[in-house]
Image (cartoon, rainbow, N blue to C red; front, side, top):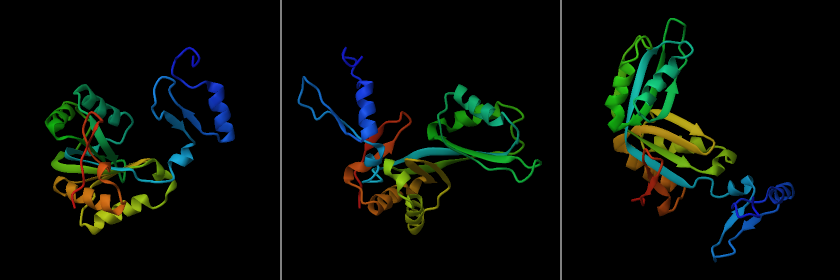
Length: 222
């Protein structure tokens, strides 16, 4: 496939490079571009370990109290949201203290989708014995970096920085390369500035999130 112009690397060459720790520098024969450097994952995670801060101040939270503690309920809830074309971001559910008590399930959606999300859930009977609570004045700030998985204490530093700024964290979502905190919408700018300074990031490393997954660059103000 590679020899026929399929724009993929020949499998055996990649295998030898991986086994013997050899970097691959792939460049075009037709232009003077820098090409692509293929290196081990560990090398990409050394420095810097945090590469960007993303943020959004246009989100809303929905909380279902008394959610029935049985298989399939979460599937019904989020299927109803998907059928209503509502994109869900952060999801948190607590374990009920007993079988008699339901769980609390919270998730975030775009502020413009809040009414649609509530209507979709209300259309599903028997999923919750409690109320549907909403908050349309929340935002989210996230730090991103492949090196976080190899650097202990990144989450602790994020929480400490926000705490020092008097910013209350209402929800937390993590992955190996991302830590997201749901906070009050009017504190998003403060959180962005604090995290930007704490991790010594450049002016081009702050991005505004949107529902399409694209990011719009935004310089930090100090």
